Length: 258
Ligand code: SAH
Image (cartoon, rainbow, N blue to C red; front, top):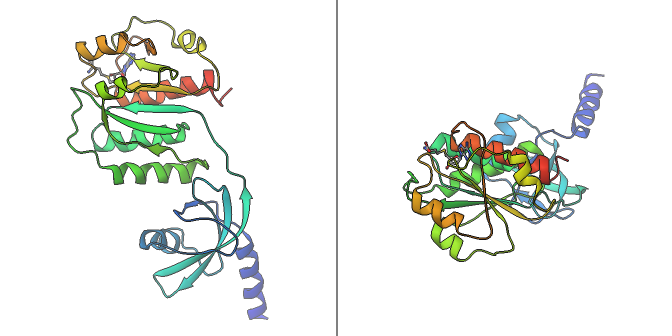
């Protein structure tokens, strides 16, 4: 009797699909077998404590979401057998997030929030007062992936190459409006400013470093026909706060929070 009960429970268990999604950098098609990276094996076996036969959603950012089945190979190795697609690939808001890199914790936070707020890309911008020497892209990527797994998105934001503000503006596609979050702009409703733009149409937003923009940068930005300076109210927020504020407003006024 006992082993029948165990079998029944294991069948029940294996039918449940884990609520934790896993990003895999691998083509997704039926019967493909993915060898888990050590970090993924640790997460699946030790953190989620999944066992042989467990089912979990996997996605790769381009081919929708699939159910995969976990197979153990010893205590530390595991593979994922791809079973069937459960969600078609979907896109998200065409928001391109430009930011001056911040220090560790704030940068981690900002990368996660920008991902949860549906940005299509993250573009690090070097400005005169950016106080970060070398941008740790692996760390940024890891934060983006972790946030993507948690918030259920299928399109993973693209992390672009770091670029100086002047160079970025010089090569700018003038069809793409750039919302310049200007801490020195006169207070005026950001809702009105954003409502003037085309809904569901590509948009870039720029948030400066902790030290803010200097006068030359502000003058250069305000001289561009595609730039729209925007105030986020009378209080000077931390850059990571401003990121959440502007992305929430953009989603609510122009993209898929409507
Ligand atoms: N240290 C600077 C402020 C920098 S705040 C100073 O005291 O002037 C960091 C970035 O967040 C700014 O460059 C801007 O992009 C954004 N930001 C913060 N508060 C803002 C506000 N009230 N309006 C518009 N942008 C703001």
